[in-house]
Image (tube, rainbow, N blue to C red; front, side):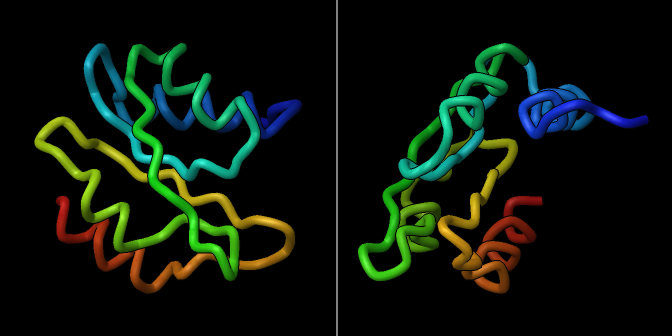
Length: 97
């Protein structure tokens, strides 16, 4: 299936993984509004994790601090051509499973 925007893709992704009322999804503070709005449209709650000053990307240490029993997903956003620390973020995500 082809979609017309990243917003549509993110929204479909939230539905595909079953985000529902009350589920939390961790997102960076430095991102486009649709990163949080797609979570809300799926019924979930965006939880904002701080970004690192040197990269402007989501801080894995703050992701860990924001995880709760309601956390169902993490949406990392690569900022300004700088990749997030995906190895660490994936380690965190795999521990949530």
